[in-house]
Image (cartoon, rainbow, N blue to C red; front, side, top):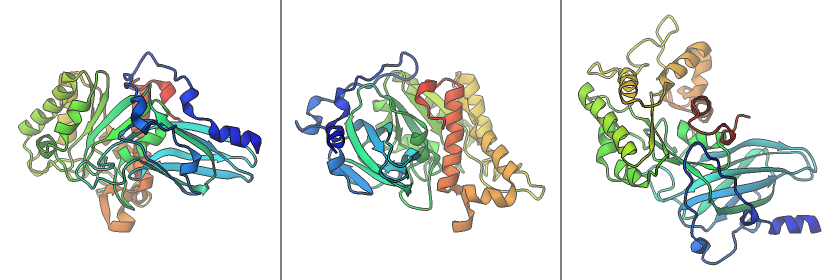
Amino acid sequence: MRRMRRMRRFNLAVLTAVTVSTGLPVLSAVPAHAYGGQRPLGIDNCTATACHFDVPPGTYDVRVLLGGETASSTSVTGETRRALLPETAAPAGERVARSFTVNVRTPEGEPTGPDGTPGLDLQLGGAAPALADISVTPARHARQIFLVGDSTVCDQPGDPYSGWGQQLPQYLRKGVSVANYADSGESTVTYLGNPRLWATVQPQIRPGDLVLIQLAHNDKTTDEATYRANLETLVAGVREKGGRPVLVTPIVRRWFNADGTLNNDTALLVNGLGVNHPAVIRSVAAAQDVPLIDLTAKTKALVESLGVEASKALYLYNEKRDNTHTSVHGATVYAGLVRDELAARHLVPRGLVRVG
C-alpha cells in the first residue's frame, strides 16, 4: 500500500521527454501557469469508469498505469469518442504502463459542432477495465497531425458512427497528437469557405506539421477545374506555413456490382459531372510532389476481398442501410491502413507508431 501511495503521487513532470530528431516538429511547452498554479491532476480526478481534468485547451501527455488484483483489460477513449489507447491486458496483480498524447480544444469534436465539456475527459472501457494510476502533464515534445476531411474522417458525436480520424490516435504513441478538424458534410468548396474550418486550421500549422487532406464525398456538384484548384489551394496553404501536406483519396462506398467488384461511379467517387475524385487527387499529388495515401485503392481491395456479406460490418449497412459511413470497427480498420502508410512512408517516425 505504501508503494501504491508513492506511485499515486508520481507524475510525469519529473520525466524528461526524448526529442526525436526526425519527423514532425516539436510543440512549444505549455506555460507553467496552465494549471492555475496547481500540481498536475491525477487519479483523484477519476471514478471507476471516467476521468475529468480541468485543463485549458492545449496538447497533453497522459500516462496510465493499468491493472488490479484480478486480470484486467482496459481501453481509453477521450473527448468526443476518440480512441486514444487500444484495449490493453494486464495479468492479475501486475501493472502495465502506457502513454499517449491528446489534443484538447473547443469545440472538442467537429469544428462546427457543439463546444463540448471544458477540459480533458477520458473514459475507461474494455472487457475488464482497471486503472491504478494516471498523470496528465502539458506535452513538451509533441508533434501534430492535422486532419482535414468530411464525415468519414471526423470525430463522430454518437454511436454507431465513427470516422477513421476518430480511431487514428490509438495507433500513435506519446509524442504525436491528432488534431481532427474534419467536419460532416464538407466539400473542398465549403471547407475553404467556412471561417470555422480552413481559416481556423491554417493559422495553427507550424513548420513540419503533417496535414492529411481527404475531401471528396461531398463534392458532388464540383467541376473538375474547381476541385483541382481547391486541392491545390489547400496544399499551398499548408506549405505557406511550413507544413507537410498529405493528400488522401476517399474511402470507397460499399456499392457492389453483380460480379462482386466495386468498379462503378458510386463506389469509386465519380460525381454527377463525371469528375473522378480519386484520379484528380492522384494527379494533383504527382504534379505538386505531395505524398499520397491511396485509401480508395486500399479500401476497395479490402472490401472486395471480404465480399458482399462480410464487408457490411465495416459500414453501417446492418444498422442504417448506410454504405458510406463506417462503424467503429470499420473506422478502426481504415485508420490502421492510414497508420501503415504513415509508417511505411516515414511520415511519422516508426518509434511513434503503435503497431500492436
